[in-house]
Length: 116
Image (cartoon, rainbow, N blue to C red):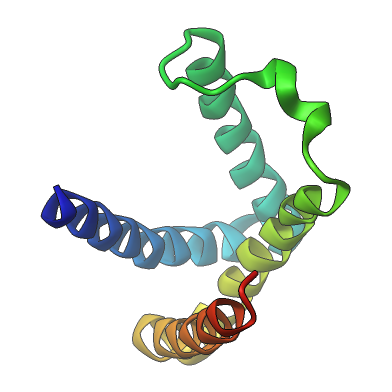
């Protein structure tokens, strides 16, 4: 079962590199924040379909029981999407992805160390 989970993580990493390239291309056509808005709208539509058709076992009814700080993820997502779309054309996919991964690993180590 752990192999499946690792493969799923690898697929997510592959998708992140492809997504960054696609977002950068959309940024060139529409501009940074229009591209970020379109990406989020498409993601919102897909997430809404998953929730409406109960394709995952979560519960939207529990949304207000989450701690306030958990909603910061939405704002961080805008920073992530816009940041990646901005840096990939300047650095290239490999360099930008390397910088992203290094920052993610260092942050993850800090979070794990602090017990967050």
